[in-house]
Length: 166
Image 1 (cartoon, helix red, strand yellow):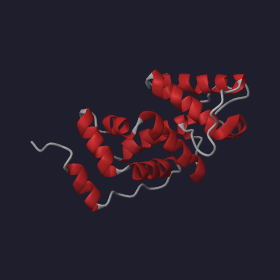
Image 2: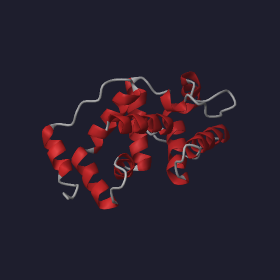
Image 3: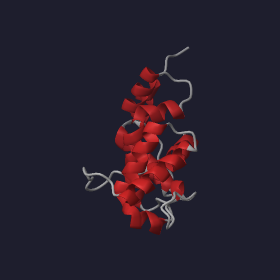
């Protein structure tokens, strides 16, 4: 589970975006260029177009171009840097990145990725049992290099009900 959270956290960091005052207006040309670059970066890792586009835009809207450059996630030409997945290490940035990842990929989608071979109904059940806030915290903690707390016994018991016993 920790390896899955680490992978998801890295993905979150890269994709992160949507915290604070989300704009409803269109991105500027520079912001769109950066969002497209971030999206292309994630598509290069195998992510589908729709969630990677979502993450690109949310990342730019959440952090702004100047902060993304300061973090080393974007270069001066607004291209996504290889540091993108590991750039969000402060508690605030990591939580924003994790939230954006869950928003763009959905918690059930992340559960399907984490638990290979589970069907959509099982992934939905696992997501509901584990909880969105707990997943975001675990992902943010992983991004910051912190230990991820084990799920409480009641959560683990609830999650085990999601998987058919053979």
